[in-house]
Length: 117
Image (cartoon, rainbow, N blue to C red):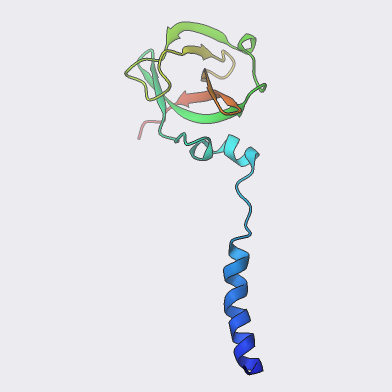
């Protein structure tokens, strides 16, 4: 083999092998991007008091505690695209809704009022 041929092979193979070395998304990225979190998608929603709340963020276990929120005394149901039968909590400061659904090491899911388009 000539030097040019070896150089050409290396030029082609190095990018191929190095592309397999990329790291997986970090846990922090998964927590901030619902589409990356344990197979959950950003299309989740909860209907509450006539308003649609869309899945905004998913938080790691221990980030929040039930005492951080107030119970709405309602649970998720068949008209919600969320885990069924879970108590819906509200953060009175922000107006966001939360449900606690154990999915791996993630458990608090935040829902914010969906923007009308």
